Picture 1: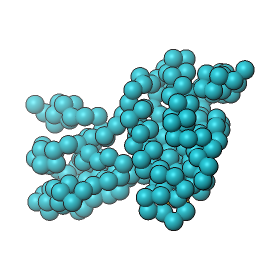
Picture 2: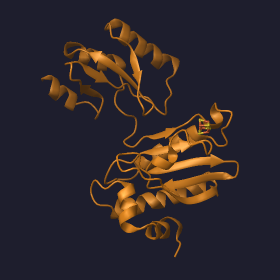
Picture 3: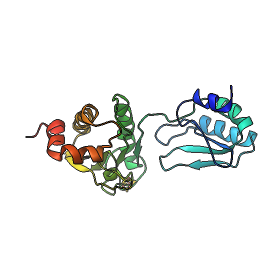
Length: 222
Ligand code: SF4
């Protein structure tokens, strides 16, 4: 089996070639958290293979750089779980779990949102950001699905995009409970999954079908 065939046996994005002939490897982690045992495994792999270290990605993941072709298989096997934990990861800020401005538990909501996103067969990638307060450090308003917390509950947005055609998400609800927010998000995602064209991001989808149609689907509004 050559190196490309080997990479094809791994989860998508687990190992990727770099222009300098080395590979990056993505150890699996969930919601920006690594326990002591997992940290020790990663540290041992870096040390044993004389690698430069790790890099933190914009998506709150750890990336191991500089893995040579002849060490790739050994590195992957030593790490155990590799590749993204979720097809569509929800990024969460510290929220009440570590930020003095936090008004809601954004980490727990991001975990819940990641699980919800797994249940849909999406036409395109979906990015989600959950912030514990209106400062929106998880860039909630520029994500396909966004949540941010206030004392009175959650604000839900949909259809944001930070790509080359930037779009601010549309607010679907404010000051709703977690369960209410997730019910709205589930309906909006179902509407998107059922009606979007292949490869159509939520921003372009909302522009095409209109905010009224999205609100009718997600909130039952006329
Ligand atoms: S969004 Fe608010 S709670 Fe989250 S890290 Fe930023 S300031 Fe803190």
